Length: 380
Image (cartoon, rainbow, N blue to C red; front, side, top):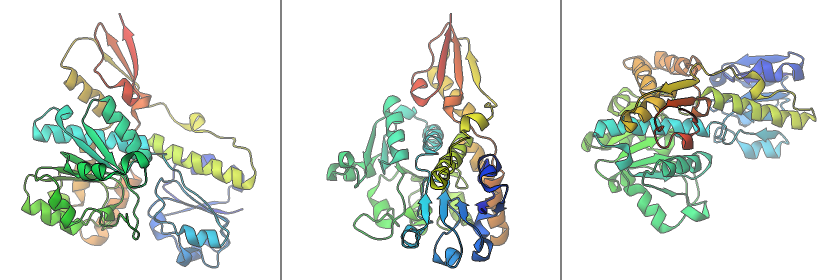
C-alpha cells in the first residue's frame, strides 16, 4: 500500500509508516499532480491541495483524508460517486483559533485603549470554532452574540441583525458558493457599510468569505475601521496594500497550534485504521512533547488585567505572527508565494492553554483563566 501525503502534515511517519510498510511519499501540498498519485492508494492533504477530478481521475486512490476542519478544497461529490472514502478532522484546531481570536482582541483593546471586557463581539458561524469561542467569551464576561442560519438557537432575524452591529465581528464559516446562505463574499461592500464605522473585522476562516478588494476600499474610506486577517483571497500572494492596511496580518496560521495539528493527524489516522480494519495503535498522548512553557508562578498581587494578558500571551501572541508576515512586503509574486508557504512550513512550536499550569502564592489567580483551560495551583 502506498500513501502520498502533504509534507507539512505532522507525525506522518509516526502514525502511518507501519501501516504502509514505510511506503510513504511526501510532497509539497500546493504542487501535487495526478502523476504523483497514479499508483497511490491513500492521499493525505491539508487545505492548500485541491482534491478533485483533475487530480484523481485515473489514479488508484481509495481513501482521501484532510487533516483540517475545512473541506471546501475537496470535491466530496466526486469522491462519493467514485467510491473513494473521505474523512476530515472537524474541530481538531478549534481551540487554537479561539486563542488566536482572544490574542487579537487583546491587541485591539490596547489599540483602542479600552479594557477588552468593554468590547462587544459578534460571532458569525457557530460550528466547532464559533461554539468554543462563544463559551470562552461568555466565561470572560465579554458581551457576545452569535448568528448561524444553520443552527436553530442562532438563526433568528434578531441574531442576524445584531451580530453585525458589534464592536468586533469575527467570521467562522465554511466557504460556500451557492444557496440562500452562501458565504462567498458574505462580507462585501454593502455588508461593510452596515457595520459600525469604528468596528473591527476578524477573518480566520476562509479568505473569500470577505471581498478583499471591497475591504481595502472600506479601510481607506473609513480610517477608524480595523481589520485582522489570517486568510486571504489571493493566497499565497496577498497584496501589499491590504497587508499594510490591516491592524494584524498573519499567514493562515490561526489554527496552527502543535496540539491542533497533532490532533488532525490523529483523527485521520484513526479514520484510516477504521477503513483498513486495523487497530488504532498510536495516540497523540504517546507522541506529543512536553510544552516548552508549562508552569508560570505568580507570587504577588498585581493588576489582574495585566497578569491575565501576560499569561495568555505567554502561550500565544498574535503580534509575533504579524511581524513575521510583514517580511512579505515588497516581494515579487513568486518570491512572496514561496515566503508565505515557508512561514507556514517553518512555523514555531505553539502550544495551547490547556498545557499551562499557573501557580499562585498568596493571591487569587486572574479571573477567567481556568475557563480557558489553564490549570490552577494555589499555594499558601
